[in-house]
Length: 342
Length: 254
Image (cartoon, rainbow over the protein chains, first blue to last red):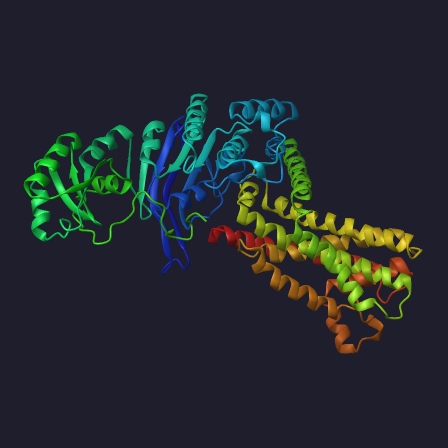
């Protein structure tokens, strides 16, 4: 069997089956042994709910999960032994030192004394925590706790590691160290299930990604193939002097008529101009503004947001919906279902 | 196959002890545990015992029942919702062990705390009030079984699907106070009306108090074997709702 995870028709409904909130809606996918599999989606899409079902913390309403050949509903014990879990919030014991946290987890997973001692030292050195091993975790920074949380999840050398949003909120060095570690673990043979809403992180790390939206899988593919779709939804955002920004439908048509613009969308007090090549469009935008007496006060290029990618993948034209109140695709929003992060 | 089964049992027992040892380090000195588990029974005792004619032995028997009851039942409602909120409970739920092992370990956390606090009460009785213990083995068995039973009772509240200890403390404290007043702790069983006595027999605390009376005073109203059997049975019965409630929590996503 080549699959680490095989999910079939997985469904989670919070509340009554007929009238409850459908958080995950009949999804199916496979994760191959030894791959880094990204699970992408906006907040409230069902990522964490799915991951909690895969890690036995949440009972599915319907469907099956087979991990390393074991049906999770019937035979979770051997799966749990081979599994490591890093939740979004670092769940270390702040009253214990890093060393004590690792020893506790090692004992809990029945790692022998010699191995857990050797392994704990190796992990603490790898994560740059060795010097602070006897300091209580309550005195650690967010990045240090994150690294300790990951170390605790892998002290028993799991064959399958679940990582939920491992890098948001971390400084550049910590985030890079964690990405390097994910690559290293994967190189050593660990299958990684990475839940994230950061496209670039998935792009850097994942062999394949699944995109989930409103509880349904929208696409499963390699990042390169998805990036081909991303290129069509790059954009240039232009902010104008307030007087000039009092726009009418004519100006929408006007912006849409600039060469290279595929769609023009009013985005708050700015215009977002979608294009396949922002570098070509930028001078065109300045020319257009100059010709129409508009004063540009800000100009920036934007990579595709996950929402853009998702819309593209599902065949909906970006900008087809004219947002009066633009969504915030890159910011954390209200959670959707009960399975969202708390 | 049999060896593997034995290995699994050994592993689960070791895991239960590892969790108990960790919880002792992490939770026993938290203000909530000191307040509800350590200070509360002494406050209750002094509130209802000061300036009342009572033999030292009687006072110690009452204090022992109170400390095992209040302290053991305080742990579950405090620790589990707190761990849910901190996310550390997920670490335990995802670990390779059965739910029963986890619940037994959490029961043991409360029971060990209660036995330690009861030992303090006993030492005070022995050293300060020069009390003699009529039946030490009954005292030991009573302390262990009472602590187990009351800790399992507290676990029912700890298993309520919530991440806020405050949501659980209120109903758990209400029940504990209610049981305290119907259980023959402050009004001896022999002095109760028939109706009140019938109500008292519903509460496991009644049997714990009766057992402590046997152990310290050397005399009580019920058969000590009945007291032991009821405490053991109530402890086991009290573990059933938490199993169901944890399964329910797994459906709800807590």
